[in-house]
Image (cartoon, protein in one colour):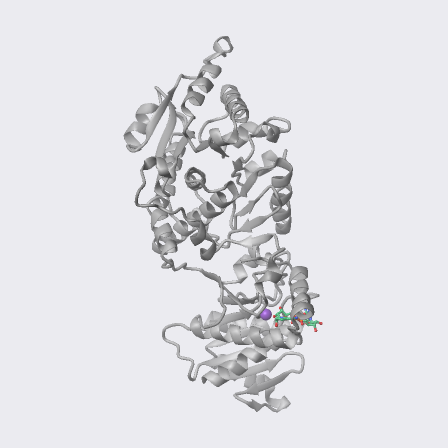
Length: 535
Ligand SMILES: NC(=O)C1=CN([C@@H]2O[C@H](COP(=O)(O)OP(=O)(O)OC[C@H]3O[C@@H](n4cnc5c(N)ncnc54)[C@H](O)[C@@H]3O)[C@@H](O)[C@H]2O)[C@@H](O)CC1
Ligand SMILES: [K+]
């Protein structure tokens, strides 16, 4: 599913009219009807459309028009609908126009008995801060919601006052429980603070032919996408079918990262996991990850005098690599100069091998920290490398450049750097960005504070590597991994809430999420992100 800027949305609408005769009123009929269908499909179990009290706040532009069409559909379905036309200060209660002199008190009374308020004030045409009287109206609804938590707020296209490009939010904006956005999710939804205002995200149809979208470069990860990439498991298979993963990760001080990454690769279906360890660290892993095999590397040099040992290490590792489809390098390695040396030597070895004969590479954490100390570090990478920095690592890779705050820059930066560095870039964070070296970008809608804890990045790196080993292209392996990882987080949160998750809690949920997505049985907790194309 594509994500659009305001300008791209306008262009799609203009093309729909030019090429297919789909005028604004026609699109609006689709929009209102689709929004009504989604609304009715999402009613809470104790609600029935008959006698449901719904108050529509109607704005002066097409967003208000969508609201009016949706309201007509709900009236036909049996709901008790009132609407307040903001510009005209005109209230209509269940088909009856209210005398201007009684508007305030009647509006108050309608609001107090409403089950739902539908915000159809402003959409993508918002051009200035909300006016004082619009803010006052939304503030009144907000107070009502605070007094009656059962009151549900539904935003049409977007919560009024959200900037659909930048994610900035007007102080008057009302947080929605559910946003029914039209045609495509808007880019600004994926940035903060807007992300907090959207609630459950549903995507309605306005009847645009899908071929109009083919030039768009920004996509949203969703179940439909992921289903098509989950590796097939033929009956006639063996562990070689699903690829071997080598992990050059972990050290005596940070053993957990190799355990988490290796387990994660296995949990998403990789055939064999091998950890590159030393005699010293072997006992730690041998007792925690029973299923792994081991490549035993010589200990690193203890002084400048025996520096040649890094070559022995690299040699021992590269001797093991033939036959491996994916290599993860970095988590928990530490940042000693000999580690950096070994990393560079491994990169040199990979660059010297033909692509089809060497493993695909994922670099995370200390792999990135070590590289970022070097000038033009990206010139050392073999083709097709995936890097998975969090914002701190990204900032180091960009030589201290600020990489967060001013959200749209985050996306532009990811796109620009993936092209400049010629890598698949996974810029982690709430709503992770995955950027392809050719300029395409995918965004993850799922944001979960429970995942903000040590070790979850190691799990993600292991998942990416596990999918690479199973033959996915780097951009698809990274995208699928981000979605499966955040869905596993969603499952843990459904049980534990948004705090207290341990990275290892994710591991058993990875295969379950994959199974359910494959069988179309996965029910996300916080978002429905397939486009609704009608019954
Ligand atoms: N144009 C089309 O073909 C379609 C438009 N659609 C809907 O139309 C919306 C965009 O329509 P519009 O361009 O009419 O934009 P809006 O409906 O967002 O509103 C624009 C109007 O609001 C006024 N306005 C802007 N900022 C304001 C503020 N802060 N306070 C008060 N008034 C303000 C403008 O002067 C203008 O009259 C979308 O969000 C979507 O809901 C959909 O119906 C699909 C088809
Ligand atoms: K709206």
